[in-house]
Figure (spheres, helix red, strand yellow):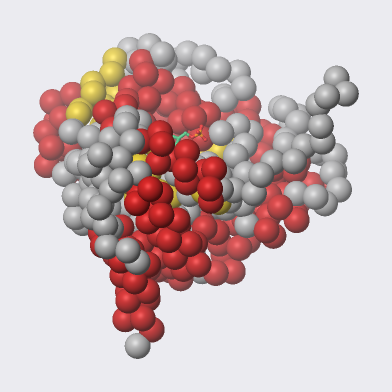
Length: 394
Ligand SMILES: *Cc1c(COP(=O)(O)O)cnc(C)c1O
């Protein structure tokens, strides 16, 4: 075993679909000493984390806390607690993560209706109204920021529409929380889940979730027990609530991280943070467009934090990403599912949404594209981004 050296990962700039780089203050928080998971000081930290999460989700939902696992466990928590065998759910799928929801919902024994849109598109309320009226499902679920396509699903009015039909609304905010507006109460969302490693600037390992009173009522009315013991909210809420009944050992260091990440979100202010993501996205977009690249999602539906673009004609997917990683230490994401080999996904999430990152990336990308034979105007990407920033400054 002596050949296994000390851990020494190369410096990277994580511009893929997640994880994104953690904020330096988050990493510092993670090196502070451990507390016991039932230490009164840690219990206070748990409460503070829940308060910060409510502010970030813009909700007064009492049941708001992080699941000790990644975003997928958030998805699973929402679906296994709200669905019993035979319940009807409509899953709106327009990309990879919508497909995942179909798979996870199906395993609960629920009767799943998949409402599909072509990859890269978004749903409109009329299409959803139609299916609600015919299926009358207990739950409708939808992805807010579809990370596989870069498409931004509008959610205004969807909660009210679902409630007209007595349906609960579940939303995936894994790539949206901390980057674009997420307003659970104003949108009348019944259950939402997210993750720590994308817009919140923390390492992977936690999945914030939040449930409305309506969702709680539906859980109380269950006839069968939740299939999963670990994700059963009826017991988890006794751990995160005032009873403090031991359920599992909270990942102390990750809770420190999330608390610090959320503190940074609140210090910056939600509006300022969303505006920052939009500004750096528009600069990146100006640069990418000048280099001849096109987005996979339609104009108006493009996520600022996840820029999915078609790989330029004649450029090899793997060779391009390898050059970026080997020469510049920059990671971007490849395409998933239908976009495999056809798209790159460039994340500007949380801490990484900065002008310096945009300019650095565009400069590196230009060199890689040129070396791989793409035709482009030298300097055009950086120049266009700078012109955008200049226009904003005046
Ligand atoms: C990343 C992602 C997930 C899965 O989260 P993990 O932390 O990888 O488990 C789920 N939904 C969406 C939209 C995502 O982007």
